[in-house]
Structures are given as C-alpha cells and as structure tokens.
View 1 (cartoon, helix red, strand yellow):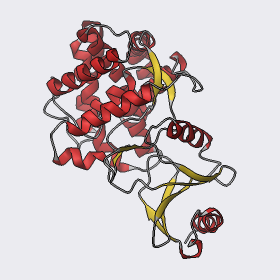
View 2 (cartoon, rainbow, N blue to C red; view 1 turned 90 degrees about the vertical axis):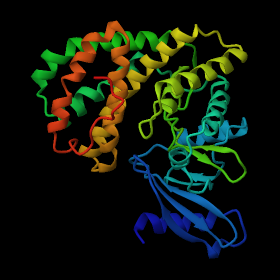
View 3 (cartoon, helix red, strand yellow; view 1 turned 180 degrees about the vertical axis):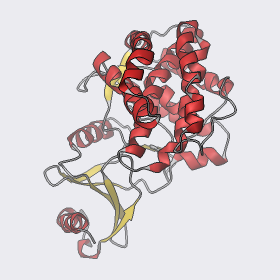
Length: 346
C-alpha cells in the first residue's frame, strides 16, 4: 500500500459515518484522465468511494462545492460524505462501477438517451450563477490544444508550418465558432457530459460524475458532448432526432430557441469547437501522460469534426485542410492502427 493510500485509509477511519470503521477495507477502482485516484471503501455492510486528489495537482474545491449545491437541488451527483481539501481526500456516495457506455454498446434502443436528455435538462434549468463563464478566452484556449498537441506534437508539424499553413484558417474558424457559441442561451454546462460520466444506478436513476469543471455556457455544449460522444457514434438521423427532442423539451421549459435547422447548426458548430479541443486533449494524454487508450478515439472525434465542417460552406477551407491531414494520420506510427470510421465523409 502506497503512502497516499495509507494516509487515505487512516483519514477514512476518522470520518467513516458508520460504526464499523475499523473493518473498512480499501480497494482501488478505475481512475480517469486526471491525477485523481479512486478507491472503494467497504466495511462489510456498505461501501463508499474514497478519492485521492493530491492538492498540488488537483483543486477539489469546485467538485465539493458543485456536488453539494447540485445534490441539494435534486441533481443525481454523488453525495459528499466528508472532505479534507488540504489533504486532498474526499469520501463520496458509491455509484458502483456501471458506466452508461457498455449498456449503449449492447442496446441500440434510445431509452438510455431519453433518460440522459432528461437529466441534462435538469442541470440546465439550474440558476446560471456562481460558475465561471464559458467565454471567448476559454473557448479559444481549448481550441488551441488542436494545433499545439495534434498538429505539432502528434503529427510533427513545425511551428513555422502551423503559422503559415494553419494560423489564418484557425483564427477564422475560431471566430465563427465562438460567435455561434456566445449567441446561444447561456446555461449551466457540465462540460464533460458523455457516456463514461453517466452511471445507471440500482434504483433506476442516472448518476452524474466528473462535473467539477462546470461553467456557464452555450446550451448546446453538453448536448453535443452526449450525442457526438468520442467513445460511441450514432447515425446522423438518430442524432438529429435526439437534438430535436431536446430542443422541444427546452422550449417547453420557456427557453427561446431558434428553428430546428438553425438549432442543429448551432449544435454542429458547438461540436466543432469541442472536437478541436478533444483531439488536442487526447493527443496530450498520450504524449505527455502516457495514456495510450485515448489514441483510438482520436479518429472518431476527428471524423465528427470533418463531417461537420463539410456541411457548411463557410468551413469549406477548413474541411479541405482537415482532409489533407488524413495521409499524415495514416502514416503516423501512433495513429495508423486506428483508421477513420466508414461514416466519415470523403
């Protein structure tokens, strides 16, 4: 048992809310893309989750604050049982290990998505206060991960190549995507609302995790995160049906939204912003953090980006530039094991 794990177990024995604190056993469970580590703590009768989030690498204050606020408002996030931000430890309700993703891979029905959309409406109906804004600076900083980590670090383009061949195009693209994002209604945004962060629960509910980076931002952001998921894909027709279902639900709550076609375009453009970010993040997770598992999801995310760019004439130059990257991706020793999906428009 490592030092941090031993410290966590010692802390848990002090804060364990039940009588059997001396019987608590600690077992590692899967982590995520951050420096946080998760442990199942079991006293033989009940289980909770212990989180080790080293304070020099992870700021847990937003997680505790948002979890407490959202839980109090009926959002199905894990209850915070105890926390010590100085130590970097948290004790949480246990949502078990079942992610939504494996269920979706086995069951093509839209029932899980209807539940996920209803839960998303609940989040976006929360008061849009107390969270940082998803403003142009944040949106730009995220998209800059694409040239830095994907074009430069993964595909090997020089700074000069990026500056001469890509910079004017990227600046134009950023401007269009940011304008679309900021013209939408601004709501509570989970920021990573997808099938690996949704947990079907024994009581039939849908648990929501990894919400600590929540912001106030565009109404389509979480929707595109869910429906253009980097880990599983659906037909354009099915996605359009879900988008319209969501739009109608939000109209019923009183939001002023555009027509179905205009809303779908906002959805697509918001997706392009996110996909630029995610392709960069997945590249960084491999190159900087050694997390190879995210490499296989780059082609799907890149495919979403290319398909969306091809739908709208203002992104014709971008779509051509993206297509020109495909031979580089095929020749890349890290990416060539993971081809583009057959649904990518060519």
